[in-house]
Image (cartoon, rainbow, N blue to C red; front, side):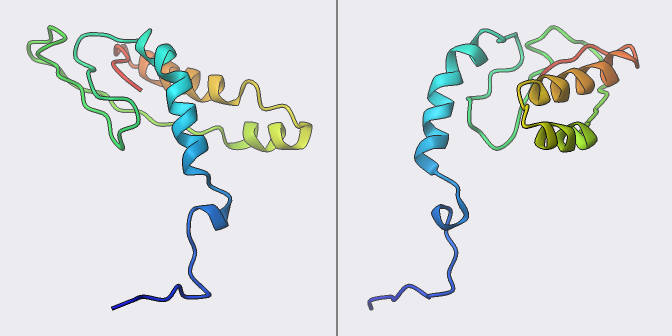
Amino acid sequence: MATSKNKNSVDYASTGVSIDAGDELVKRIKPLAASTARSGADTALAGFGGAFDLKAAGFDDPILISGTDGVGTKLKLAVDTDYHETVGIDLVAMCVNDILAQGAEPLFF
């Protein structure tokens, strides 16, 4: 049975998302991501979740501390000033700082 495309359907391309551009970005950042490799974090790039093998990293009886942060107001300022160069750096730095403030070791991001 042939299917017809619903005129109201939405796909990635119609929302401005390019699968090809995303694939190209992953290809370009792969060497950068590989440079941050550590024991325990062996998940493939471009997965939808992260995994960390605590035993492979040498932890015996760990307590995990989780943190999350967003760029919030900084993103609004980046949009208003058309300067986006540091938003990603800030996001990672704030997440890492929140973990470090509790005396934990950042394991993966």
